[in-house]
Length: 208
Image 1: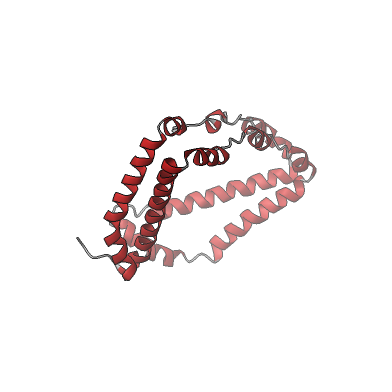
Image 2 (image 1 turned 135 degrees about the vertical axis):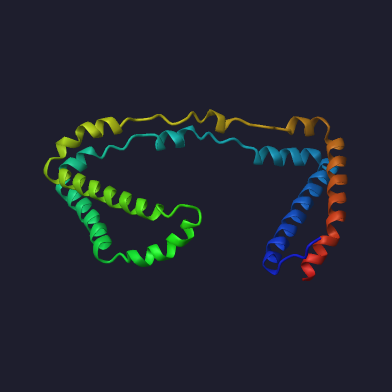
């Protein structure tokens, strides 16, 4: 078995503590199933309360219309879009250290035959911001030309049904309530065996 790297030691110690706590909880549940099953089932019923998520998702699923604000203040919105796109293009034209970036990135990509990627990314980013600049100018002077694009893109999509999220999956309460003693013995034996098996490993990890 290879030695544990020093940087992985805190993670291993944390994992060991979590495992011990989980096994301790399993041992407690097993003892409660043997000694006080009714109290355990009452506690489980209190923790197993169901909450309907439909009202919350219904609020989140309501459309928020910003078209009126957009058309009322289209000059301000367009000016902000134009300013942002122009800033990026000016920075690319006058402050972008293209030789330095290419010298740093291209040799690594050239080994895999991907030396064309930086140039393609540059062309894509420049073209994208030129298009954004043109859209900003349209928003300032002729926002009505974008109504067709808005209608095509602004289609409301209903969210998925929340019924699967509200359903109970893998419920074993009936099994435990029908055979509490058997379930308790299985949990106690399994938890004690795992704790004994892990004890040397946990002790060695915590000593470091």
